[in-house]
Amino acid sequence: MSNIVNGKEMSEKILNEVKQELKFEMIKPSVAVIQIGNNSASDKYVSNKMKACEDVGIYFRHHQFEAGTSELTIVNKIKELNNDDYVNGIIVQLPVPSNYNEKRLINSIINSKDVDGLTDINAGRLIHGKKTLIPCTAMAVMEILDQNNVELSGKNFVIVGRGKLVGRPLMELMLERDATVTICHSKTENLSEYTKKADILVSATGINNLITAEMVKKGVIVIDVGINFEEGKQSGDVDFDSVSKKASLITPNPGGVGPMTVAMLIKNVMTCFRNKKK
Amino acid sequence: MSNIVNGKEMSEKILNEVKQELKFEMIKPSVAVIQIGNNSASDKYVSNKMKACEDVGIYFRHHQFEAGTSELTIVNKIKELNNDDYVNGIIVQLPVPSNYNEKRLINSIINSKDVDGLTDINAGRLIHGKKTLIPCTAMAVMEILDQNNVELSGKNFVIVGRGKLVGRPLMELMLERDATVTICHSKTENLSEYTKKADILVSATGINNLITAEMVKKGVIVIDVGINFEEGKQSGDVDFDSVSKKASLITPNPGGVGPMTVAMLIKNVMTCFRNKKK
Image 1 (cartoon, each protein chain N blue to C red):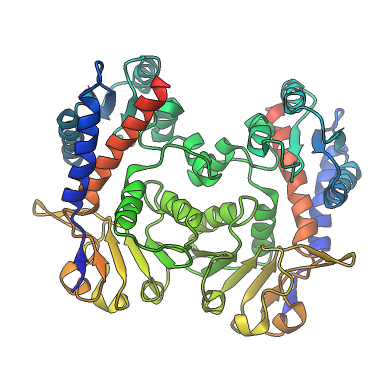
Image 2 (image 1 turned 135 degrees about the vertical axis):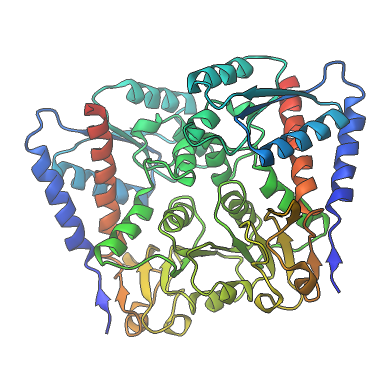
């Protein structure tokens, strides 16, 4: 039987530390979320972020735009927030409706307030091994591994999913930590050939039960990033019941990476807040 | 017996096309190379670039600084070149002496003239799948594979070497083309476990004869990026004599990736030149 990561408990510890720190601040840190149109999953994510922020003492601004709003109006709002000394972090809630240029919106955010770590320049800084703001989910995976003292150097680290929120930045972080990294994705032939060799396996696809017990070796560490909703019930990429019997460490889903991702967002807001005070 | 890539012939074809195109231009494209201090390998690389530029009709400016020159003086020269309408591409010849901040120098180059593809923002644009200037050696590998009609989608692509000039950008390019990508490096345990599985193997370490016949499968495609000089003689990472007996396609070294890298630099200069004219 494997050790099961308690993402909720782990995240609460981080959030509590922030809460303590913020007791001694006169002016709260502030984060602004830009949301365009209606998307029920986004509503849920935004409300999770809001709750976490308000709990720790971060002022949360929710800028909701109707789907018909011109892109220029939204870019101008972002610019206004860039210049607002009382705003420390800015988020464009993804996905945006398809008629908007997502990349343009994201790159309108000033790099020093890009708490999702998604502007071109912050991504480039990550590749080049510089201190930068890093996408929260990739940070969450690292934090979970580190808090469980997982040795990374030289290990066979396999990521399933090549997105810019998880797979790509995680690869950079893992290379910095001397892991050997493989990225698999929807076009990979013989996926299990790769996953079976993994010492550490991260799945970030959103495909329910993609990873089964036959696809992993005994003692593997499994981090389940995927999020699927079926009939209102959340599940992950990993067949937890069977895989947990072989894994030495595994995240449940829900209750694993999710809460830690929110905690990492709070960490990024705090980084921006502290940098600003310097 | 494998097909052997003729990098020299392949590059000459590209250079000839550029030469033809430039016959009809009144003002030549121009590239400026900043070189600091003395480094005999750098001298050779700079002179290769100069020769190729002058052959095709690109005006080459060589700005040589003594090792004691202040960093500010060099940054100011870069800014001057950024603003010079007659300069299309700027290169900071690497490595710079260790008392200089290499990243600062490179990021002083305006993104639109960054023909080595090394500024933070150009690296970030690559990660985010945008049109951008790409490091020449990574481009050379892609061009060799493409000109030989190598199928990439779903293939097991293994890179040995995680540098920002080859391994990291190549990984991004390969993911865009749907290959499954593994990056190995000096800390990888059991390197041959990975290389033996490779459909396409790129080695970019600078370790002489690192890749031997026992480490590859029959029919593998091998691209040898490494450059070693011993007693004045150039060799690569791959034990060519033995590996070429198993490979279906292989680059010699010298005469493979090297000439193609210079051709890709010329391509990048031409891209900047054409973008400028638009």
